[in-house]
Image (cartoon, rainbow, N blue to C red; front, side, top):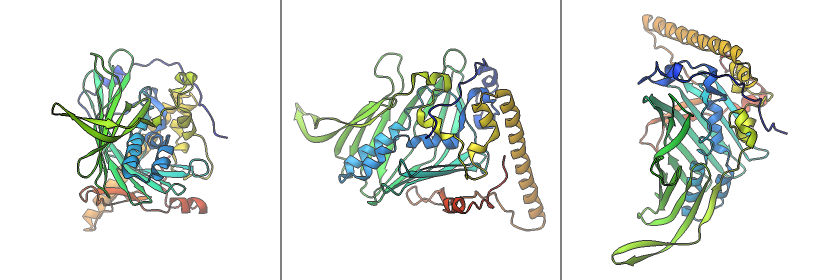
Length: 399
């Protein structure tokens, strides 16, 4: 039985502006932020929330029609934004070498292992597999964040891959997130931009548009999209909002009236619908039930697992002062480890030897054939085997 909520957020007032006024134009990944602006999850865990609606991929894996499968993949990409509307807390920046595993094979059919693979810029790599439903999904995630005075712009950099047993192989990139009212008023979040999903086997594409919020009306959080064949023929039309639902209609014909063409569509079908959160969730960081389950203590995880990170655990338990003290200790420990690596590299150079760069425990950089041969951190295997043996000798001491 998994837990259904976490302890309430303490009622402590703190001005975000007091920190942000020193950050205008700076890269926010280098600014130490107290836990007062955080939520008690790390970025490693937050990105596992992409799989909250993993049943969409299970349905997609059973599609015999490639265009219908693409429509479901598009719905999956939209569903990953559903919690962002009300989640204004900043996830913890993982320490270098921090890992997070989440094994839901028994009930949801998938398991995931993530690792923080770089520190500057902060980058994580994630690999999720569903043996039950024959799909695997992996991504490398880093971001650029810039404070623009009234709002914060977060631009994800990295690519997501999704492969089905049929051989269909999809890639896409996430859209921008804008955090409004940094200086005054209630923080609110918008996601906007364009996304292209490509099936590299068939060369079908899906073009998605996340429309920016407009003060002059229109549907807020609106998402529209089209699935097109490799011959650029529109096969499906998609419409919805990123915080509630996505529907799709198959195109069955085209009519031309007075030189203007319009698409004839079959009845729309629901591709994804959001599960409503507990009305009490405002008291605990607006977490969904799925988010509440992520940081629950589990036995036999790696010693580098986020669940064992002390400052985040203290914060979840409402001990914010102790959490801030512990956060400083962990960050200083990480800095000391980095200085030690730099010293060793310098000594190696002096001896005419090749300095050994930092290497992640479970991931290695390989050429990504679907992204012009650019390097991507790829899961090398071994984590679940190490867990079965409880042999964590490869793990660094980070906490």
